[in-house]
Image (tube, rainbow, N blue to C red; front, side, top):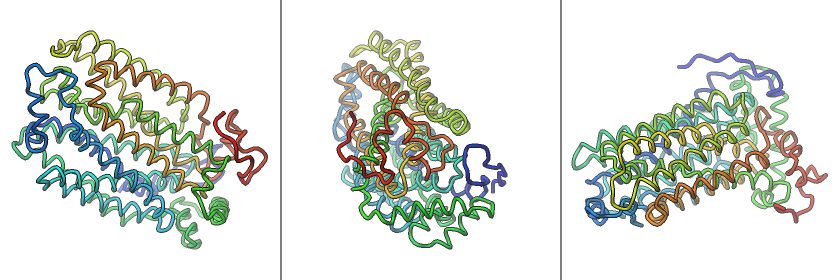
Length: 511
């Protein structure tokens, strides 16, 4: 068991006394295993779809195209059903996240996390024993339900249980384990690709291991004080708050949570409240963060890394090994975010990374446009250059738009609309992940190297969004975010007018 970290939460990071206790650390780590499951799935699908045994079993047309001597480099894997195998999970996650937003409020974050782990186990079993494409897709849909429930509950759970001073670093544990899951999946794919003809079954079945860890571990975590008080369990909430903060003097934080829950209890229609003018700044920023996160092109790299590297001329083993390299960079860079996000802040990381990703993608597009034609093999030295550029791109994403795309929406909504607001984060993320996953191989076939310029253009827009439209949320207690961040922002403050209840003028929009 990790030792207790007896660091005091002082200074101007928070007005509430707290220590980063062993209880908080362990609960955050166990909950973050939902991220490991998510990451494992992202990494495993791209490697499996590049395995000949898997293609022969479920996608013989793609297998034939892949081995056709004169097949266009950019169109080898252009198949809607193959893309559906990857993307169906995210379509299911959209619907699941809506139900998860309800269970989070009515039954708590802990039970929602447990439900996610059950769906993960079911999906892993179905995929492992799949006999036809329908069974395979059914397994993916179960995994999608797990992703929807897990991604809805885990970031909220960690944001509510963590002291304000350490909220960013602890919440990024979720993204860190996503990257660890991707790396593990890439390593497993590299090993199982040599195990014929059932290596792909071992890859897909491996998802059951982190799912079982999450299921067993979820019984050991404590419910958040906010969730307990929200459901009328005030005394238990106060005891839990003292336990996780490691101090007796928690009355001020308890009163803040109690006040927030009283306001929330008066709001019977949280989705209607979310549409009011005073909730729109957080909602707009949340939705834009999810759209931008996907239009960086990161999931193109993570879903289809082995496919992409094979397109550039790497052999099957080399392409899987290259995916392991990028997965390792992903993990290390997310660790950087863990240590610096609560020191540097959110905005600076997002701005720096936008510049880094834009440069890397633009150069990638130039190299591919000049060196990879329809039927040739890219010279080795240029393939290595592209691999290095991919690593630079992935590192920038992994310490910024990746983890912060989940962290910021989990900390900016007031309690009365927190579950509803975070539902929009999860569902928007899953919707655009689905669209990218379903369309990428076709876009690659049509746009060829131009696809990297397409994503670079989006990153260019993201740079200005981070500068002008995103308030800094570092160190602000989660239930004081509206007053200390949004009402002081040069643009968003007009949405609040003079009305602290958030009713104001209902006509406002982005203008």
